[in-house]
Image (tube, rainbow, N blue to C red; front, side, top):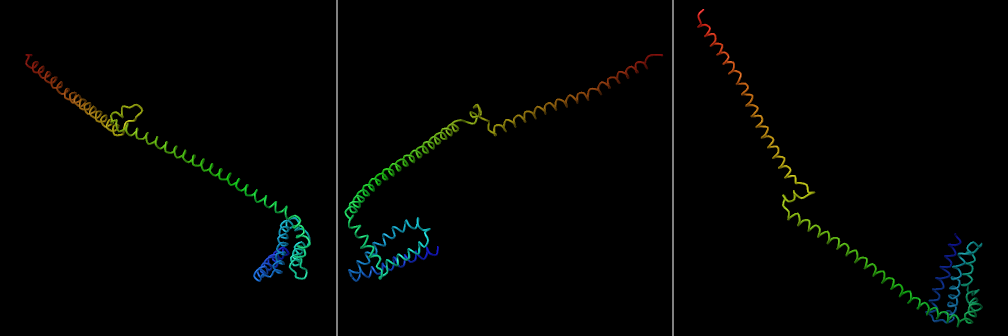
Length: 242
């Protein structure tokens, strides 16, 4: 872990920032010798970074791997070894010069194909986006129509029901089958029934009281008649001679 951190710092500081500053000075001073020197270094360093991407994945387990990377960067930068110029003159320049035409043709074809592929995928993406937008708009309009239709039907049903209820009177509503009478009519009918029952009970009680009074008054009259008859008999018997 420590060797990995040190190697990254060495590559960042001595392999990137230091050569970038001296490349700036070479461009500013217009020194062709320094300019060519640092251009060769950047070509070798670009190849090194490309290879490093794969070697860090597959060769990181190798002993002293990060230490070898640090030593390689120092060898490229050292003015005594001149590793970057040596690698460029011995390997890179002859290989690129021999296959320069093929590389140029491959780059031109790649540019054309990439442009055609970009246009093709761009058209497909636009078509997909347009179809998705159309389907989404159709779904939204359909849902809005359904909501409007249902609300309109509900409004018509409520209006017809209210008109029907307004057209009928309370008496007509009570005669409709399945309709329950209102509580006001129920209370009025119950009060009428109670009043009729009370009047009937009052008449019955009055009749009963009259009969009782007649029964009470009749016995004394009979008793007086009996007494009178006995008195007349005694008077008659007293008047007869003995």
